[in-house]
Image (cartoon, rainbow, N blue to C red; front, side, top):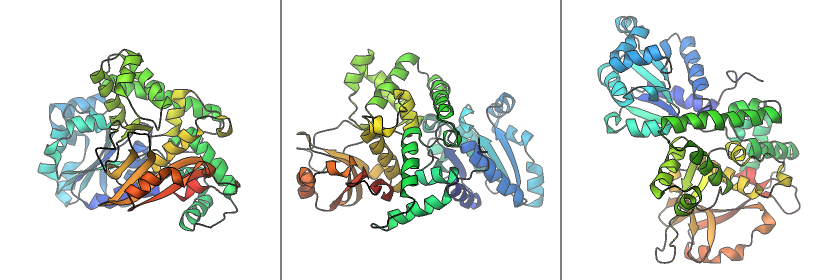
Length: 416
């Protein structure tokens, strides 16, 4: 397997690097095994090359954790703060898994309020569940939170050492009629991405069997760890719920139906889905309301943060040509892509009580924005079917996103 440490997520690394000059804490969150620790180790290497004073600590170390839980300033038992204070330089403290602190909010608040001119904290946290519960208003103005996603398709190509194809991909996005000589290879790699997703270790694995084993470990170990630490009591039903949601990715979530199927009360279903959201397993997409009398659908749609994670939950790694759910996989990809391109708060779907629907709505202003309908093959897209939407919302440009274009000679989706 190629070394993950040598593979850089350039945009994310540069964003964190640019924030080093700011006094606020840099808090990096995201799913387990998505590359947060690797990223801050690469940042530490940059600090070392610049001659900065820094230390790298993990709160998975029980000795360190016990010390800082007794008092936040015990962190300096493991650092060189006196040296940094005496020569006027800043000390950079990199903390992995900060959420394990008994009170991470108070810990970080004290460091900021007493030492913001001398100490800069860069911290990672695997689960937004803890960040949400513990990082409250006491850190307002004292932190900036960065979210690290699984690899985008461009980053996937970089990790595959196909940077030339990434350039071709950008040309295809920028120039509507651009025909890439590499489109067949891009197609094949995009198929792999739709099936196995963008977890770095999975992308770098050399065989399909190895990829599948890594994804199974992600579910069996890391999802279990999130569930345990979040206080899930009925672990088997939690996993069954995850599998039910994976099977209906891109569809409406009816908590009552799910509760009846799993013999769980509604509040428990709500809580389990909340934990999955805060552990970066799923995202819920809310409906777009323009006319509340007619657009009565209030249920969210569910999508998975990574296609590979979704596929291991449904136990299906078949080729796209052999799959009935390939449209779901494409739609899940488009959702994740749109979340990176636009503010997630402005991303919705549209559906009326009588069943008219558009997959994705991006609000860009008052009564204006973009609308995307996803079809695996563009021949399935019938513009007249969306007349009610286009008549009701003329300020939203409707576009079809498809993988296979009639004639089969290009890949439309890579332009998104």
